[in-house]
Image (cartoon, rainbow, N blue to C red; front, side):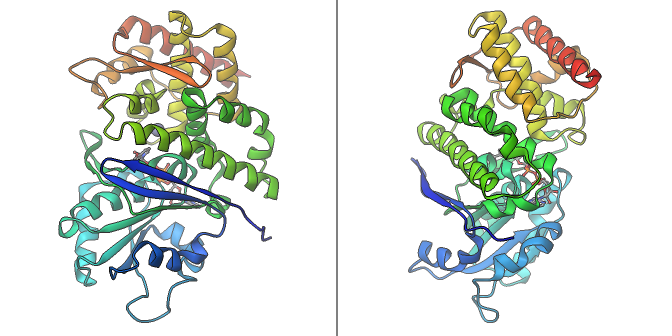
Length: 383
Ligand SMILES: NC(=O)c1ccc[n+]([C@@H]2O[C@H](COP(=O)([O-])OP(=O)(O)OC[C@H]3O[C@@H](n4cnc5c(N)ncnc54)[C@H](O)[C@@H]3O)[C@@H](O)[C@H]2O)c1
Ligand SMILES: [Zn+2]
């Protein structure tokens, strides 16, 4: 079935180091070549697509549709295995080697076609290959469309921890083709939606209300124009939140920290489950439920407000349960990259759509919040 899709007005990223547009809508891939030409009217480029075999199998036709079938304009395709375990320096080196063998020079234009893993690797590769080449983000998961493709953070994992090597490196543009979400596994879609719920909680009460009102439309398995329209709306609203925050604080010196709502215990949950069992968005959802407990205990929001937010998070579930003690989770929050001089930055809502960052969160508060969240998890498993 084909729908006549929607393209929403572009959203501008404007920071001291970069200025580019995020374009969101249906059918963008099919006109990609023209879009790239518009971005680079005078400087020649050779396109190199970096993607993983699963995504390429599903979407190569659409991506290649607008490019010449032969000659220098025909993209070179480099495949990299999917999955967080492959987001490593070894991947960067292997892809750089492939680029060199394929004759990529300073005119290379890398196209990061995939989820956050491909996007983060490719952005970092573009920062260092021949001391920097151009790249464009073509995010294919909901998480990548609403979050990871925007804001210029790129990098890879070390065994010692996630995202410990990387650079700030913005793309020339982001084209988020919402058609791609049709083939996304439902759990990946739901996990990505948790980042949109986060955006609503921290910054945008209207997005929060929209997500509340449209749960059924958005989660229905059956494709429909209503579902596509709602998802496009959610992607655009979430991107606007991220763009607004990044535009004010590119390097995370202040405001950008609010994007880490739910992430303190979220990252701890991911570490406790070896980054395997729980999707990032799900871990953030559990972390958010815990943070809401802290917020009520501190009196920054009321219990009914917290209940409303928790209800929305769970409405976009089911969230995968996990096994970890509250004590272990608290211990793991000490290795969070967001900590400054041993102090943990912690984000608390002060209403729906507004937040504050505190630096005096105690182990006792976090422990109580983790216990409350684990008890909520037991309830959800038993029901
Ligand atoms: N740079 C940032 O600011 C930032 C922000 C948040 C997260 N991240 C990073 O993003 C990564 C997670 O990204 P993710 O959730 O997109 O996971 P992912 O890139 O691992 O993709 C998830 C899975 O979905 C598959 N897939 C992708 N697109 C598909 C499609 N259209 N149809 C069917 N299958 C598809 C992939 O092959 C993969 O198996 C983490 O490494 C995280 O650190 C970065
Ligand atoms: Zn996140």
